[in-house]
Length: 66
Picture (cartoon, rainbow, N blue to C red):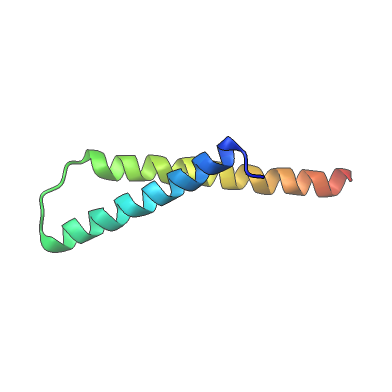
């Protein structure tokens, strides 16, 4: 069963992908965008990147200790 934290990670990833896709579509269409949107996208990406690295670290530690 998935935990609430796992589901939050899924929603964060989907939100980040949707925002990034919307950003590039708007950029392609020549729409003037706020500087806040790329910062928000990179913050979500950073959140996911840190958690992915943490998962790899815990898997490696578990394999060495077990």
